Amino acid sequence: MLYPSIDKLLTIVDSKYTLVHVASIRSKEMLENNHYQMAEQEYTNKRTIGRALEELEKGLITVVSEQMKK
Image (tube, rainbow, N blue to C red):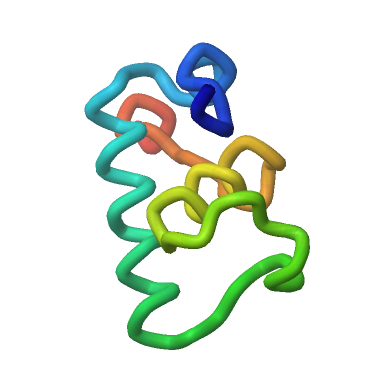
């Protein structure tokens, strides 16, 4: 089973496309800056894309949609 579950993540974001977009941006930030929001031992995943999804699931990343900006 994959962690975190896509079902849980889709309750946080409005679509799969948004989920992929947010996770990819955060993953690139992790690679470029080597900055993590949790201690490395706390992550279940070893890859940055999985770690980005974990941060999203734990509420460490806030997603603001375009509709909310208007």
